Length: 168
Ligand SMILES: Cc1cc2nc3c(=O)[nH]c(=O)nc-3n(C[C@H](O)[C@H](O)[C@H](O)COP(=O)(O)O)c2cc1C
Image (tube, rainbow, N blue to C red; front, side, top):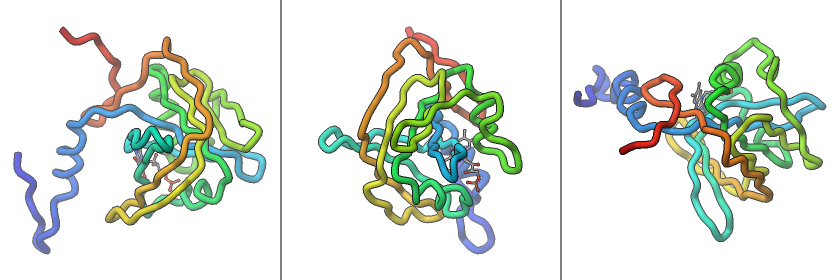
């Protein structure tokens, strides 16, 4: 399949979405406490960036209503979701719902929110943001990490949640 352009010469967004969906990713909850309540979104654009200093990156849509609120937070909690947390991911991506209903979470002293049952918790501070087309590229410094290596991570591929399998 090649990427078609529309009548204005812009790439067909549906075709691009489909192309990008062939790259499997994990899913990360990005959350903090705002006005004493948890606020968050799900992203699959997470990537590790640097060891020294410890940096990770995410890309957030400029249309996001939640990101400006999160960006103002002192600390953000990033939780790499486990394979049983597909429904939580959907909740964190939906509008007009309680995104944290039935999803146990905890707040750190600095106000980051991490999700119970995740494979990894990273407590981060925003270091820089860059223009990324219709997204903002955000670099975050990792201040603290908690690892749960026994938790199998959730995988997002071709718009479906999947589980990892040992390859031959
Ligand atoms: C699997 C999955 C991955 C997502 N990844 C991203 C992402 O990387 N960047 C992003 O801005 N939104 C991503 N979203 C969408 C957001 O989670 C969410 O829909 C949006 O931020 C909610 O709208 P609001 O920010 O306006 O409240 C993803 C949604 C899903 C279901």
